[in-house]
Length: 107
Image 1: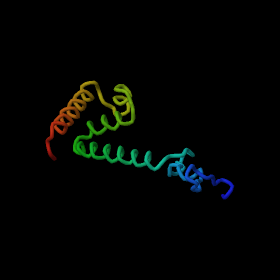
Image 2 (image 1 turned 45 degrees about the horizontal axis):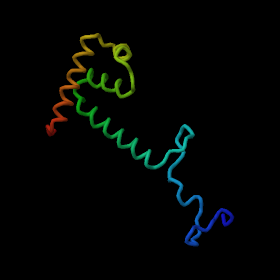
Image 3 (image 1 turned 45 degrees about the vertical axis):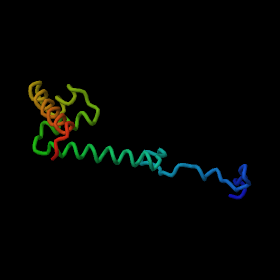
Image 4 (image 1 turned 120 degrees about the vertical axis):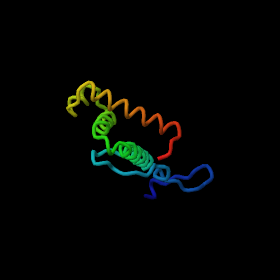
């Protein structure tokens, strides 16, 4: 370790590890910083909050989950067994509720 220490311009010992972002190895074997993990956690919490708004609407929940998973309309319809009308109606309910929430409705 002492071989890695260097003196900075002010004569202080510096290790190359001093400025390394803290983090961990993911299950896929990739390095993830704690900031990235925190961001993923916040995104997951937001997804869970939005999905909870549709807990009494299974079709809207399926459509929304499909969208969150990056699926396209036809993929969602096939996966969820929805016809064009059911998909469109669910998407409208999602948009309507999201607009109301965006306009500051509490609940």
